Amino acid sequence: MKHLFTAVFVISVLFTSCNQTPSSEENEGLKDVTGLYVGTAVNYRQVTTRDTIRSIIVNDFSSITPENEMKMYSVLSGHGEYRWNGVDTMVAFARRNNLRLFGHCLIWHSGTPGWLTEMEHDSTSLSNFMKEYIHTYVSKYKNDVDGWDVVNEAITDSAGTMRETFWYNLLGESYIDQAFRAAHEADPEAVLFINDYNNERDTVKMNATIDLINRLKSRGVPVSGIGLQMHTRMDIPDEIIALNLKKAAETGLQVHLSEVDVIFNRHNDQPGGGEQIYPELTEEMLQRQGEKYRKIAEMYRDIVPENQQYGITVWGFNDRTSWIPGFFGMKDWPTLYDENLQKKPAYYGFKEGLSE
Image (tube, rainbow, N blue to C red; front, top):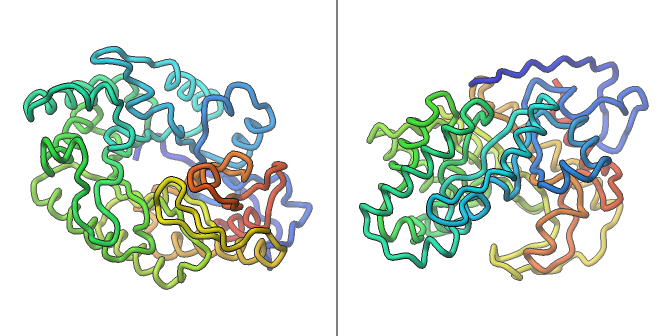
């Protein structure tokens, strides 16, 4: 892995419970207590106009993933018409603050711009387009982006079949091969991930992902990482998460918990599909969430071999800007900081789980 990170940290007092906050550790960020990369998703506004947000990012995290600025619809306004401003802003912020920059994402059905899907294509023209796009993009930022989600969300839920997307319908499974080969050609040192959601709790989907990875390997496709988004729920048993983490580790690939948050309520994975089980947040719920975050970090450290630990990235770090309520149409409190940017028990539990 390029841009190797060395964490320098001093731990004077170990946490004994996730809701204790010893004053001697208040100034230590999450990144200071671990040798892992600890990341967060960020957006353009947060890194350009929000001083308090920027301060938290720099203090707590050693890696950033742009929420939307690196997706195809943000980068490409037309065929060959690139808009680099958003990516350049993220690159500058990462450089200035010595942060690893992770690229999310190259090929994703929901990230594909409408103008592209409305054009007429055959398999040859679409393959040529994808190769040109990835070569142009990845080679431009090869000195700044450490790794990429090359293909995002390729597998369906529960059934474990290939998702029938714009890319799959024209190119079949070979679209994944082509995307990884193009990314590797453009930057042979980048860590290249296949990334998906629900793999920590949907064993059928995880098994299908493992089968896909094995097919890719058998064809010599340069896949080097597996990303588990880990948008998980409080009611998902730790044993199931541990089982699927073990499956991910057994691939021998780099393992990235790439979009972590922990919700109390439920949803059907569709926009507006939230089920409001808990209308209000209680202290007992906060404490249980802190324990869940602690267990996720501990399981990752214990189960994934050190040389396969790409890191843990939370998908946003405060409840005010979490994607969960707006997307699913429900109240929830999924992150490490509350709406007033105060640290929750989730923060301290996660910190304890990260601690060496």
